[in-house]
Length: 324
Image (cartoon, rainbow, N blue to C red; front, top):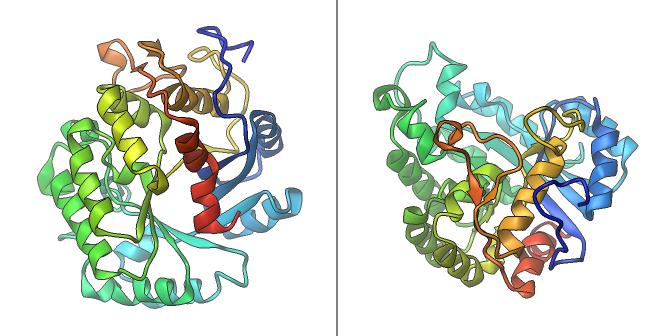
């Protein structure tokens, strides 16, 4: 990390890493990012393929490097095009997909502005989708809620977007209704905020069919750093239920910009390694965080997790779930 200007790091964890949450929209700059990841110890990763043809191209260029999540169209989901979604699930295995991905965070209303009424995945019309995924043995990577900071700003109009507590309640009902479906809940199940960790702990105790990932780096760093002692105890207690993920878009240019001394992937990777592995205090997040830019920025307080926990986080949990 010689080109990282804040501090030089010798990481506690030195074995292979699985990144359980990345995106690919096209193959632009992909080779450069993959080469950078290899140098960082990324042995394998879960990629959300946003266009069908991208999966085949990526696999041809980097055979065996990825497992792929089939992105199920938000427009199809909101539009209740259940038969179309069931057909896509029917063809997932033959097309090389290991799991499905759904994005139904409140921001969908900004893209589908003509939609009227209340949308809930717990509506019984969607039940066949989740039953199909479970019967076919496909896990579901699901993103249903967002940071508290979004609900205080972008989603402040609850009549349009709903509330976070409503969205988390819907998510819990969905988990409860489908005990045979394995869920990977994106972004710490939207609950890395310190005051929400007890609620997430209750979920882990009640439901065996959920794991969470640590995407995105700025969200994890911002919230878990607010009380590193509480966060550390939580990660140790539930070390078998958390997967490392950056939420990086792999086709983003790997070059740095004026706002960060590191490439986009490197910045997110370094931020989380500081968070999980060190006992640093008040280390600046090495890339911008729009949620705190008017408050002086986000600072990382490391959790200094034990090596056994780091092994679960970075590798073993993904092996158990996806057979990497």
